[in-house]
Length: 105
Image (cartoon, rainbow, N blue to C red; front, side, top):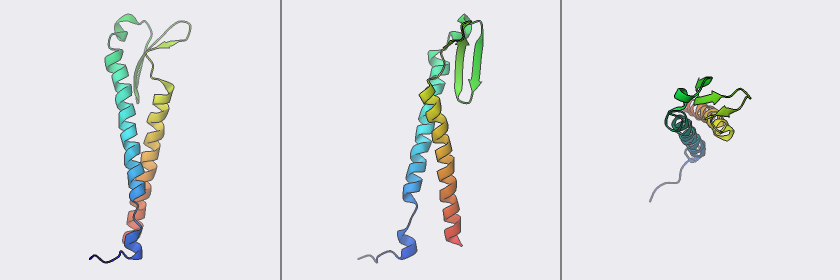
């Protein structure tokens, strides 16, 4: 039989680690979607466009028309998901690391 965990051992930030890793996965998946849209789907866009706009973070290759419309741009929800998941990952990872350093002292 194993002994029951003490008070400090029972409280672990596993849920924070889990949410942090899920947000990292969402960030990487949305980055991959943006990259595929920019460099696979819109591969021939630079050859047919007069006003080409490139963005590196998140990756995007878009063609701007004279009337202001963009062709080949990333969907707004993908870019929002990209940045929100990045912020959530950074905040939760730093919170878990801060908790771990406080608990060691």
